[in-house]
Length: 96
View 1 (tube, rainbow, N blue to C red):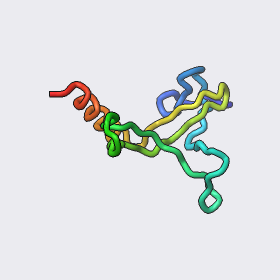
View 2 (view 1 turned 135 degrees about the vertical axis):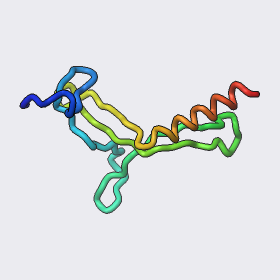
View 3 (view 1 turned 180 degrees about the horizontal axis):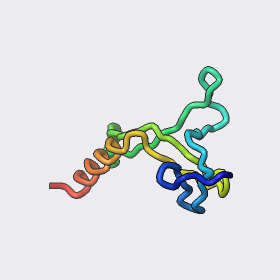
View 4 (view 1 turned 60 degrees about the horizontal axis):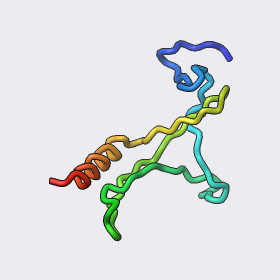
C-alpha cells in the first residue's frame, strides 16, 4: 500500500498500518432490509437495578477494520449520549 500522511489518514492502533477500511458493518447473517444488512449499535442501562424500565442510553456505531492485521475498531456515533447515561448510572449507584 502507498504510504499516506499520518495526520490525515487513520492508522491501526494495533499494528500502525494505514490500511484501515472505514465504514464496515457488523451483521448476523440473517438481518437484511432492502438487501442491506442492518447496522448494530452500542448501549448501556442507566438503571440496571430496575425490574422493567432500565432506561437504556444507546448509539448507533461505526466500525473500521485494519486491512493488514484485522484489528476491528468500533466508534459510537453519539458518545455524549452514552457518557450521560454512564454518569446517570453512576449517580444511581453512588446514591445521594
